[in-house]
Image 1: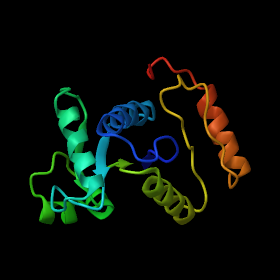
Image 2: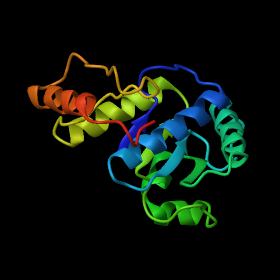
Image 3: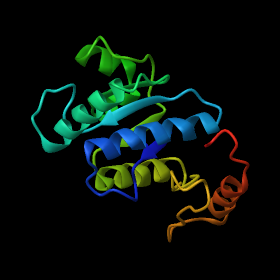
Image 4: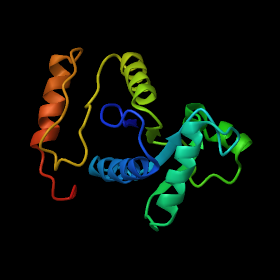
Length: 165
């Protein structure tokens, strides 16, 4: 499961969110998966007029104008992103089937909290945080990183990036 943006843009603009979605899709593909990206917020498919929901809906419009070749949808809550049955009850015309494999959040607070919860539920093993957009030249090492986590991020940083650019 990929989670973005956990580190860089505290309250991203719609354009920054759209850019993060596109960069996330590149990274998901780098791991050999086809991206299914959920734009996550407190609101779901326009049901609330919150700031985060408005920014996510504006980002969705930016993405739609680009004619992208991967699945994305939003804005939605995390449970709807990860459970197709929940999403189907709320919004039966979702753009992708099954669970999202990447979650893009409306603030770094939300994304970082989710990242840490997932990391702990998964037994503390993660690959990341990954800085996107820097040509794979730099990544972040957090104070809670394990030796295995450090090895994972070093392997990622040293991997060829032909398909990344």
